[in-house]
Image (cartoon, rainbow, N blue to C red):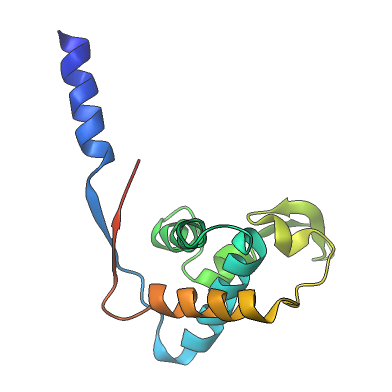
Length: 133
């Protein structure tokens, strides 16, 4: 019986609503949109809109966590570095940032979609999401 009650509590808590509260300040808004759009583009341009939004939410949730830097760009650019400051290949929070490939978007349509999603996710009103644990 205890296992059933515990399972019910876990299931209810896993579907609780959460409000994303991160809103960049005006002076860094464009930089934060660009960084978030790059992350969406390089991590999920071949995914559905839901997948792209999920990448944005992971990024924003990290910004809101005390365990990560307090800006989108800093979260995305977080990487292990050599003593000379150079980034260690494949030692980043997001793989595209330190894979050694160009970070210039080539697919104009996917880039436009990524920017649109990034702007929508960073609106001042915040975003209601269904949080699945």
